[in-house]
Length: 428
Ligand code: AMP
Image (cartoon, rainbow, N blue to C red; front, side):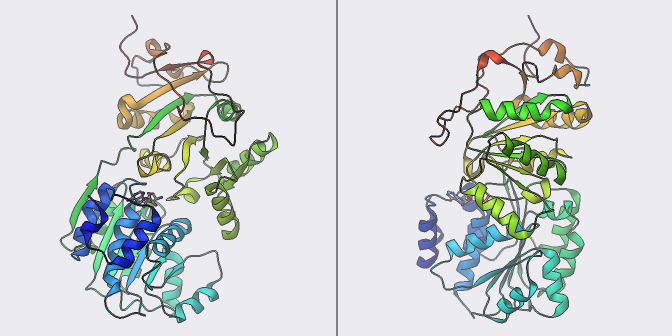
């Protein structure tokens, strides 16, 4: 299937070509026709599936006709980074259309946004908090919105934004098209969808399990050994860009400092940074100036950096859904990726859920002198003790060729490590 089949305006197709998209991704193939037919959509899609273009292209198509000037499309997303990325997609795909868009989020000057809103704007990509602020001040008019997109709705729920979203919706015309995208479907999102969507078309790409192109390797480790293990992995693994998740902002900051001191090019992304610093970090990570970014969950939600080869959970996420989102930062646009997760004694409960989620894809990894036996943390009472045996057939680390910018990087030495599969047959 090609993009021509959608009968998009030539000016929009020019944007698709400029973006380098040759074939629609599955979510684009399934969603673009019903969105163009002005149906409501409930899209259950993993991150990195191309869902932004799936809604941006039909919005551009719709707005090519009709009046220019009033805000006719509103996209609400949980984070500034995601709003910014969506805005950039609109700019890229819509560059020949003459449609005008802007972003609205907190942490930056509101007066610039007010000035921008006084001029012609057709499409807004916004975060809920600042958008409500503009509504309260009367500096935005949403009475002409024809299409509402709620992107990463489950993140908005996690971040406590659903009441804000409901408040915003009251300022929109009741007659509109509503598109809701979410990587997971907690009951709160289902009930939001029941309230806001009219006779929606349900689209599901895969299930909410982590993208299948990603490998999942778990390192049982003592808390005090985590940093040494991270350094060892960075030293011995062929990586491209590495995204490391920590639980707290202070740990993200201090870990970045420690790694910088030993010569890695590292930046961090967390809520204590100004918006300008967050943008600098993300831009530097995206263009390869930084090899590693240490981030907290909130800051890293939805970020689209296609070249991330490894996600490392230095600290376990809080839930299995959060794991899905984190590892969705790699394996984007159907590329392969590796997810490494450090597990400690406190993570036994989540480990159980992740085992159910990942099944045979979950592999344990031993690093001599740095990790402990998985049976120490695996309280399932299963066969883990017997499972501690080498699996030499498996190549655990990325098979990618080392990057030329790190020509001296050593590849991983099998001799140092062993791996186990939780579902391996009983030891002979
Ligand atoms: P998204 O899930 O919207 O964040 O998209 C993930 C990545 O896939 C982004 O970098 C997009 O630019 C890219 N992408 C979206 N659609 C396509 C396509 N049809 N072909 C190739 N890449 C795409």
